[in-house]
Every structure is written in structure tokens, then in C-alpha cells.
Length: 473
Ligand code: G3I
Image (cartoon, rainbow, N blue to C red):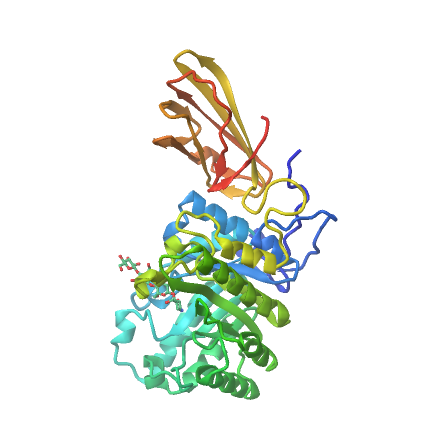
């Protein structure tokens, strides 16, 4: 019997759950109930978050999607995805009138395959403007036209498939005044209202957000944001939500974080934690990681406590892929998985804050153990063995990596139904094209021959970096 039959169903509340129909046509609002048995264990972030109707999202780096471990965690743990870079202006319209859809389409397909919402990021921003736009000498009329065309083209392509869009990003200075961006220079403060009106016209179903950093507590910058949102709403400008990026520093979580979210929610807008990470001086240590875990949990708890907070997105999930070390030398370790895609204490902090139970509940696999693996020596002689490995995966896979150790001195001499490499005693078996896709509850298998007939107990097999429960074929 597969050990995680007790899992809860995934709930996407009040949102668009991407389906085949949605990708090829209209949006689908979906709200299903949680099927929980008394012993239900909420073993992944998305399962746990779904019980309160919130989403847990991650930024996705397009170039990492081809990595099976990355891909597997992104699919299994998160119910929402945001393009880390692929939907920014310089990526999507690098030359005027030339649009690059390959990477954003890949993200949409990934979300569709994994029943995830998509958070669109971002349309009008001072940063990542392509040269033609940044350096062009445009009149106000033409600049407005350029903005409207970009919004209608990008939002139009994904109409009905993207739940929320960052329409305007990082519009404020730290003192709460409007940033002197190219948009502001050419169009004045009206660029913001104009962008929201264009966005509403482009996709009436998407919720339209303004998003910023250092607006996470009550301060001059968030006061500027608050006043703007209040005024735009009073003028009937179609703004639906405020994103709080929450690029936080360890031990500096604003004490009024929840109160700040709440005051925006009280304006009648949705709030989302859009880019959460909590950086620290590196190297990390156990004490820092423990405090980081508590602070991730506090952010999640704040969202749970604010009914108009619809979810929390982390800005990438693995320290390996984080923007932080490149921007803040000497700082990092900001995300819930480490450089090797192993969950850190912060993972459990997020999971437990959402009501999940890491490794707890009834016996069986914890948050990472989403698979059963049968490692069977089918044939053995004095100078060789033939091994078959069968892995049953709890969640659908789109590419996989299975790892295990062989006794020292034993080497793989050939393999089938896998691309297999060995480094020392560690064997890494990756899918081949014909067995890359595995449905939830499905099984894949591969085999190999070695140079040794040594007898040893079956090693622990890990799927996409997390250990499987030992099973039989
Ligand atoms: O794609 C090019 C590649 O072709 C080139 O070889 C390489 C050389 O540097 O650069 C690549 O582009 C980089 C891009 O990330 C993709 O990796 C850019 O230089 C780099 O500036 C860009 O950084 C991103 C940054 O936004 C600026 O767009 C980060 O990955 C991304 O995490 C960061 O995210 C922002 C949010 O969008 C808004 N809020 C703040 C947050 C953190 O800065």
C-alpha cells in the first residue's frame, strides 16, 4: 500500500487553477474542499497552505526548470509560481515590437502541468528596461502608447490564465515620494493610474497589484504606498492588491509587519507577500537557521492572520539560486532549501506555520519522503550484479533524479532506462525522454549492471533529493 494515501487534496481558493481548458481559453475559478482523514498529514507546503485557502508560491528561474531536482521541488511544494525574470520588460520585449514568449510560455506550461496559479511579474518598472525604451526620446503620448501596447500584448496573451499581475513595481523612494523613473519623468504621476486602467482592459479577470520593497513595516515608504492606494481607490482606478516583497534581514522582521498588512487590507485590497527571503551574514549556523525558521513562520502567520492576505511567495526556494549573494556580498542563506536542495529549518517553519507536520503524525515519510523505492538485485555472480530500481512517486513528476550509494569499489558498467553517472560511491540516475513524465502515484524503473557480486543491504534511494521509503517491487 502506498504510504501517503492519507494526504489532503490541494485547494486553490478564490483563484484561477490552471487547467488545460484555462490555457486554451477562459479562466477557471476553482475551490475544492480538503479531503482529510483524521490522520491526514499535511506533508508538503502546498498541501498545508491549502487548508487555509492561501497559496504558497515561489519565483522560478527559467534556466533551472530543466534540472529534475529543481523541477520536482517546485512542482511538489508550491501552488503558485512567479517568473523571476522571464516576464520582465527586457526579457519579453527586448526590441520594440519583438516579443519573446518562449520562457514565459514555459512557465505557463509548467504551472498548467502542476495545477499551479501564476503570479505575473512585472509590467511597468524603472528597472530592466531594454535600451530602446530606457534611452528613447519619447513624447508623453508615445510613451503612454508604448506602455499600453506592452500591457495589452503581454496580459492579452495570458488573459484568463494569470491570477495576479504586478502592474506597477517599485514606484516609491524610501521617503514615500514617487521614484523619478523614466515613467514618472515622461508621464508624471498619472502613469500609475494609466497603467492600471490599461491592465484592467487587457484582462478583466486578473487582480491588479502594485508591488514594492521596504514597505513591509509601517514607515515613510509604506505610508506613501498607503496614501497612493487609498487615493487611487477613491478615484475609481482599478487596483486590487498590494504586494509586499519582504526581502528581509535576519532578526529585522518589522514588529508591525502584520499590522501593516492589515491596514492595507482595511482599504479593501488584497495583500500578498510576493518575494520573501530572509538573508543573513554567511556562513550560516544552527542558531541563525533556527531564528530564520521562526521568522519565516512569523511572516506566514501574519498572512494567516490577515484574511485578505491570499498567499506567500518565496523569491526562489534554494540558496543556490538566490539573487542575494550577488547583490549583497557576504550575505545569503536566505531561502528554505540549502545549496544542495535539502530543506532547511526554514522549510519546517513555513510548513508548521501553515499547519503541516514535518515527519510527525502517523509513521511514514516526512515532508521530503514522497516516494517508495524498491532496490532489487535481480541477478548476482562472483564478478557482477544486475539491479532493478522501481520508484513509486506520490506526486506527478516532470523529470526525475534518483540517487543512492553503492559499496566502495563497486562500479556501474552499464545501465538502461536511465542516464546514469557515478561519482565515488554516489550514483545519480536521471530520467530519459520516455520515462520523464510520471503521473501522481505512478512508478518508473531503471536498471544497471555492476562489476561486483558483493552482498549488501539495499541502499536508501532518494528521489529529487529526498529519501524514499523502502518498499517492494
Ligand atoms: O539573462 C542574462 C544572461 O544572458 C547574461 O549572461 C547574464 C550576465 O550577467 O545576465 C543575465 O541576466 C541577469 C538576470 O537576473 C537573469 O539571471 C541579470 O544580469 C540580472 O540583473 C538579473 O537579476 C534579477 C534582478 O531582479 C533584476 O531583474 C534577479 O535574478 C532577480 O532575482 C531580481 O528580482 C527582483 C524582483 O524582480 C523585484 N524585486 C527585487 C528582486 C531582487 O532584486
